[in-house]
Amino acid sequence: MTKLRLAIVGAGPAGIYAADILLKAERNFEVSIDLFDHLPAPYGLVRYGVAPDHPRIKGIINALRDVLDRGDIRLFGNVRYGTDITLHDLKKHYNAVIFATGAVHDANLPIPGIELEGSYGAARFVSWFDGHPDVPRTWPLEAQSVAVIGNGNVALDVSRMLAKHADDLLPTEIPANVYEGLKASPVTDVHVFGRRGPTSVKFTPLELRELGELNDVDIIVHDEDFDYDDAARAAVASNKQVFVIDKVLNQWRKRETGKASRRLHLHFFARPVEVTDDGNGHVGGFRYERTAPDGHGGVVGTGEIRELPIQAIYRAVGYYGSSLPGVPFDKKRGVIPNREGQVLWKGEPGFESSTASQQMYGVYATGWIKRGPVGLIGHTKSDAMETVRHLINDVGNWWRPEAPDEQSIVDLLEARGVEYTNLHGWHRLDQHELALGAEQGRVRVKVVPRHDMVEVSRANVPAEL
Image 1 (cartoon, rainbow, N blue to C red):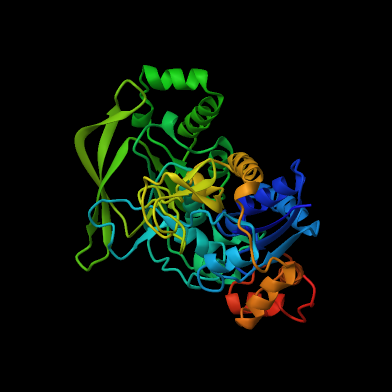
Image 2: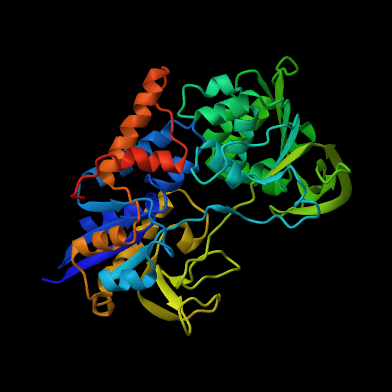
């Protein structure tokens, strides 16, 4: 019987779902899957890209843990694709590879002044407060007034974490260095800006409601933003999610404010124009144009320019994928060019183009690196199903590896001195973090430094994986 030796690069939801779907799929061949990740711990953006005060995320992690704990997928953490292993290595040891590397960098916001000191990408800030091992341990939280640009869930996460009192985060798994940084923050006002109106936001109702539950934080909305046109009224009447969001926002309009020590302001119909300099190369203000409904669900500029004094600004305008050595990359979209998960190329591997047309046999993509940084967990599952279907049907075009035995990749990593971690190591790190939390009366305290994560994970590494 034919056997598929599959490598999956990326151990977040996209990679784990792809592995699980393949193992459960109807097929006439055996499957052996190795999951690689550059981080010592699995789960990707679920562990390092979501605010720690989201309890529902635990349910997603539990589902991913159940897949890994079945024991039919090998995990190799702390392995960097392009450095520790290459595409050439994968061709030598596997029949195919699925790239599920996601999108972890911030998209650009091309306005003057965005490069000033005190201007940050939301994705990097999220990585910091989630204890990502490759982000500095400290963060410059020195501003009293902060602007957040964006009307999606990431913007809400960033705004909530900036405005929330640090002590209210202690029940979560927030790392100690993050707690200390937020505890010392002098912030009093967080301003969230969106280009369009309240009925066009990309927030989910649950995320929005969480803002209204913050302790000692007033939510400020402005009556001028709720003069709806026919298109906005139609959206409220026809879309349940928009209806709920509109209801929440209008309830906040009636709230008494003025007694809290911090304020979170929601500004709609605000198009970013410029970040102004305080005279010393640092953020000093945010200039924006007031927009207005265009009658068709969009907005037009009014020419009215407003400016707000701030000392820091965070752009939460989207994520952007990273190119991978030997793999095609679309610079414009930040994705691997593909047709339903089948990677496309033209010419030699490693080119950068958005016009690829020929299938690159043996190479597949799923998740955000496949479709771009949009959609929720449900989209990730359907992405994986589509990609796996093509992988199964492409059996005649799989690679023919010269060393497909499972021990060969272990020997390769060890010969190169790669301090890889495995599923047993993740269990050790998981238990270690839970124990750290128990000592402080908390559920978990994350280990942040990569060296410490690896050291805990690799203590008495078992010979078997």
